[in-house]
Structure formats: structure tokens, C-alpha cells
Length: 360
Length: 275
Image (tube, rainbow over the protein chains, first blue to last red):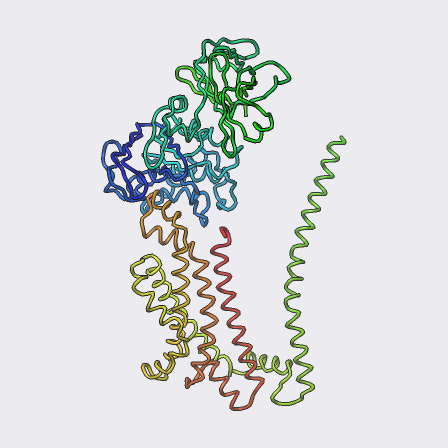
């Protein structure tokens, strides 16, 4: 395990005085929009790009070291499996340095392939692998040489949703088990919350905000809010379990039913686009729907942003402009808000759960 | 019971289906080979009939040419020394020229500065037809055994150089980056990543040059060298042996085909698993 620190790192046209510290065994996720400089940070750490400032691994500057000498494992976005090598040779390539013992290499490669559950792919070529198998092979190659730091660049970008969801759990488990210091780049909040125990939002070549996932989602800075969205934060008055594994949560006049995660819910965060708005009382069971008054609305080319008063609380709702227009609503009219329980993010003191992911 | 019967039937159908697919495949392949032979057979037939109708020594029949080829291959010792001499020159020239082109191609492909320095020179020399060098080489090295070999060296050098540079430069830089991050040195990257991935381009150059080498060797041999297919062609022309000329041309075509096939087979063996 190793710690890594970036001190005043700048690159031409991209990074601006980036300072960052990742402790031993920590998993930092760099989250940010495309072109923000996330991958450049990884390239700086790996030594693949020139920079000013200093990179320190375990407190020692590594700026003078070549890529080969930095001992970082790098899982590239496009994986970069060598197409002319079998799975075994791809992974073994990370160990096969001159005088290395062939038997030892074979043993270590087999061990790594077994750990990742791909030992049966031993003699296959990358063109005959599925997306998930390629990911595992690339991960095996990055890990087999026991790097000090593991760098992931958008690891699940090329995978379908289902495979990505399964793989992310495996990767999470594996990283926990290996306790390797990891820096992962993603633009997906879902991946970030699954992998991170520390999150840094990168915008315009700077670290905009750094903290736990919960810190950032519930207390985003102005710029971060523009990227991840500005959630309605509901400071809950109380919450208690009810039957069938459900929990009742009260926030002013709003009562919400959600599945019980086994802890007292302190706050609920829900993005404006995850609240449905209706002009009439919705039919069906009267759960998770509240009546309010449309205070105001602002229209953009595609969306309408509404301010709705529920009791003494104010909530923001965002809906497609066409849907809003079809309801012929005016300020001051009563409206109904519907909360999709799968879209509610809840927090206790230390825990953070995005319900959609469990349910979906 | 019903279920097991159904399963057995399904299995049988599946097996039968896959077996028939397996059988059908080589048959289709044979049919494909036959269909590509058909135009050749048709051409030979037309040739035979037209030559028989013309009945003139300048227009030998197809069967006459084949008879002559058979005689030259198996009954006389006229053809073998000439074919052997040409083959030796082509193989030697091709080996030296392509090895030099390969090494220079790697150097230029990997070193942008070298490429910048030498590419104007290569751009000037590459378009010169190989036979254009002949008068100059006749003066510099004389009319001797080395003349056709040097011509083949020159004509092989440039296509391999060009294609190797292209192949090396076309290797996705992300593979090189990935190799570096897992500790590979520059030499290892060259031998284990770049060259294997550049093989398709390099072999395109080799196949191109093999055909060109046979074409230029004939021309070079026609000048004044005592042995070779080119010499045999000139002799046949002076004796008005049209059948012999055609035999030499057929052999030439066959050699080009064999060289091309050989390079194709080697390339396929080296790359079939991953391409």
C-alpha cells in the first residue's frame, strides 16, 4: 500500500495548481465532466505526460522516474489489451522482464486469473472476449505486478448497464480485499459512489470539491451543483420503521414511505428532475404524494423549473417543457408532487444510499 | 419420458445439423476453387481452338506450350540452370533489400527526427523505377552477376521501407503507453508490441516487392547476363521459339504467384489468431 500526493501540479492547457492527497489503501474517485482534466491527473501520476509541480508516492518525489519505474497499475479507458497476445501473455507481459523465472510468472498469472475468475480464458485472444472478460483481463494485467497505486480511467465506460453493475460490485470487492490505493476516474455518480471512499470533483483543471460521497452530494459547491444537479435536501424531523421492511419519514407536512435500510434517516436528497408534478390528485394508493402550491416557474427551451410550496417548505421540480405546457398551470394553482422512492437518496450520519441502484 | 425423447431428438437434429454443416463447408470450398479455375480453362480452350485455326508457328497451341513446359521441366536440362540463376538472384536481392528496408523502416518509424531528415530523400528516390537505375549501375558495377542482384535490392528496399514505416507508425500509441505503464522497456516494446502489430503492413510491402523483383530481374538479365530466365527469353526470341517464350512467361507468372502465396501463408500464420 502507498499514499500519493500531488503538489501544485499544472500541465499546459489543462491542470491548474492541483493539490491532492490519497492515503494508504484509500479509493479516491475523480468525478467531473468530459474535458475537466480527470484523465490528465492519472497521466501525471503515471508519468505519461509532462507537468510542473510534484508527485510524491509514500512521501518521495517520483518526478524524475520514468513511467516504467513508477510502479503504477493503469487500467485505460480503452483497456489496451494487446490483440496479438493471449489472455495469459497479456497478463504475463507485466511480469516478463528479462531474467524473471518463467514458472514463477506462470504461477502468479494463474493465481491472478483465478482471483478474477477468468482462468478458463487463459489461451484466448482479446478479440474472442466479451466486454466484461476484457475488463477483467486488463485488471489482472494492471494488478499482477503488484503496483503501488492503481489507476482506473472510466473503467466501465464501454460496458452495457447490466455487465457494468455486476462488474462494479466485483471491482469494489476486489479493491477492498487487496486494499490497494486506487484513483478512479469517472463521470458517473453511480460508479463514483460504488467505488469511492473519497470523492473529488474536478472541473476546469481544478479540484472543485473533495470529501466523502455524502458530503459532496448533500453539500455541493455552486460549481459542483451545476454538474451533479442541485438536490432538494429534506432535513427529516423523524423517521421510524413500519411494517414490511418499510420506514416512515416526516419532513414538515411531507410524509414519505421508503424501504428500511436499518438506520435512522436524517436527510433525504431528491433531484428536481426526480419529482413528478401533476395538476390533479393522482389516482391509486395515497403514498408518497403531497399537495402543494405552484409558486413560480421558469421556462428554458426544453425544461420548466417549478418552485412548489408544501406547507412551510419549498421544493424545486424540473420537468419537460412540453409536459408542463400540457397541464396549463399558472402560479398560485394547487399541484401534486409524487416522490419515486427509487430516486430518493437518504443519509444517516455516515451512510449514503442511492435507492435506485438497489431496487434497479 | 416424453421430455427425454424430445431432448434426444433435439440432440440428434443438432448433431445432424452441425455434421451436415461440417460436410458442406469443404464441398463449398472445392466448388469455389473449381469456379476460379473455370475462366482459366475457358481461356485455354479458346487459345487451343484459335491457334489450331490459325495454324502458324508464331501462334502455338496451348497443348504445344504445355508439352514444351513438360519437356523443359522433366526431359531437358535447359530450363533448370536459368530458373535457378534467376531464383538465386531474386531471393538474395529480396533478402538483402527487404532486410535493409525493414531495419531502416523501424528506425524511421520510431524516430521522428530521423524520419524528418530522411523522408525528403526517400520521396525523391522512391518514385524512380527500378530499371531506371540500370544504366547507372552498369557504369558503376559493370555488367556482371551483381547487376541484377543490386537492381532487385533497390526495388525491394523502398516498398518494405515505406510499409514498415507505415506499419510502425500505425501501431496504436495506447498499446505503447500501456506497455510502458506495466514496466516494458523500449526494446521490449519494439520487439513484442510494435513489430508483431506492424506485420500486416510489412508483409504487404514484401508481397509487393516480390512481384516487382521478378519483373525487374528479367529485364536486367536481358541486358547481357549469361544465365537466367531473361536470357532464355532473349534466346527464344532470336530462335523464333514462341512456345518457349510463353513457357518462360508462364514460369514467371508461377514464380510471382508462389512468392505471393508464401508471404501470404507466413503472414496468416503469424496473425490469424488475432486479426
